Structure formats: C-alpha cells, structure tokens
Length: 139
Image (cartoon, rainbow, N blue to C red; front, side, top):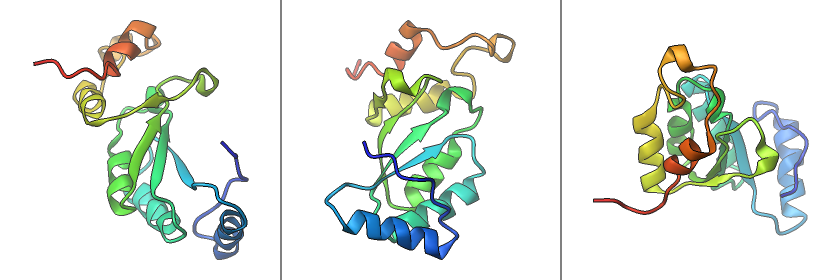
C-alpha cells in the first residue's frame, strides 16, 4: 500500500494532483472509504474518484457503523468492487477479504454486528469476525 495524502474529491486541484501521482507510476488506485457516511455523499465521492480510474475500494470503520448502505451506494455509483474491509478499530491487524458470501453475512447481521444495542459496547470477538468471513458456502 502507498498511503497518499487525503484528497478532497470536490477540490479539482487536489483530484488532479492525485491523478498525476497515479499516472507517474503503475499503482492501482484504491479508494478507502469509511462506513457510516451519508449514502449520497459516499456515492458522489466514489463517482469523483472513478473518473480518475479508481475501480476498487476498501471499506473501513465497519465496526463503528450502525448503517453500511453508504458502502453499497458508493460501490454502485462508482462502479467499484469491494476489495477488502476493516471490521476492527485496529487496521494494522489486517484487512478482511470480501466475497459475495461474506458480504451477505455482513449485511444480514446488520444493524447489530456486535449483538443487540445493549451489547454494542462489546467489541467483535475473533470468533465473531471469523464467522463473518468464513468463505465456505454452507448449504
């Protein structure tokens, strides 16, 4: 990963700077977008980044979001694939891959991935996280 400076997609000069950075090498630009945004804002941001060649996104802060529709809105608006997600406050511990099965599990478990609202202060246990991302398809 090459972490670039934050870019405001609504400031043309910042978006052009990022585009020049991308064109100077051969990196694959990937949008990192946090969950819990307003869906219209996330979609508009994704469209702006898609115009400079972004085709995939990493979704972060899923552990802290009560609603993740903005991620779906962004992916759809920017025609982006979900590359990976972060479902822990400790991104340095790694990202989770996402596929149709794990995405469905994640969506079906919301809005309470940590349990009911009264248990919301409990962090996602490693077993709960593993269960969300068990990539086997079970009949």
